[in-house]
Image 1: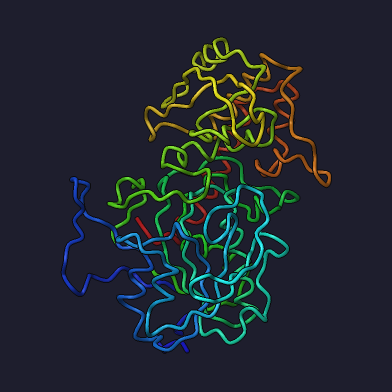
Image 2 (image 1 turned 120 degrees about the vertical axis):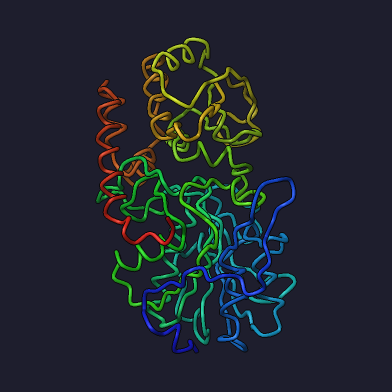
Length: 417
């Protein structure tokens, strides 16, 4: 049961209190003071209220504490908590499934509790799965892009918890690409899918805790929702400024550099140009067997986009598009991440490729009447503009207005400055 303090509001958060041990979390190597994440705050500040609780946990192995112990291990081995169910997003609890690969339910090999997949035959937990739980913990590392499907699993979990009357603690973690910038179109009505569940920009600038509060308000969920905040995080911070080491969040998200370009370069998934899956630089590499890089790079650089340069590359994907074929293209090098805009970069690249290869660039075939590029983008505007030869700058300026309006509408609810 929740304590009276936790029950005071169906939508709430607790600000970062000073550490009771008074110890500084200094990091070796001169990286400054380490932030305290939600899972650490939960054990320091909330555990006394839940001794003996039956717990469900939505998480994955990349969710680790400062000592690289997973949240699954922390909860499962704690003598005062009883882990009864695990829930897992895309890629599975152990992070071995590739993008789009369905995940089946299983039993945890060590803790002998059920692992329920939210990326397979179901998207939303059933009432039976939540029956008997005293609380749900949610702890995963997101990357700050609308089509990274962990936030869809988050939304479905909040819906199920509201229906079942189970309180939820979201154990917050940083948005690794910061919380200042919002970019890309707000998802339009009619383009809702698992890669775009909510009307937010592509780069949505919130932590999962802030997003949870927004979802609960947007969807009018009657859920007891507590956010255990990050201590020491600011919106201007990138992940490498948090004192934490990067842990790959999914099979094709190996580095912070990947996450930096991801909100834009994922749009290439909706085309017949590879986004670099099956290489050591997914989303940083792009190309195709029919691309000649020299002219493409020249034309792109002529546009003068700040914070980015291209370098010619050749590569052979080991899986996904053009498996075992030599592809030519470029690597996206971010030279100034504060000036770099991933969505703007990607749409300009698509426009240049269309100019050079109007008969060769194609969108992936529609599924159930929808082009995947439209679902990723959250609108058909990009596809229609590219096909129609419209100026992409005008469209991007429209999206900038949308993203800024969205940011302004939610800024009063930010948990972090």
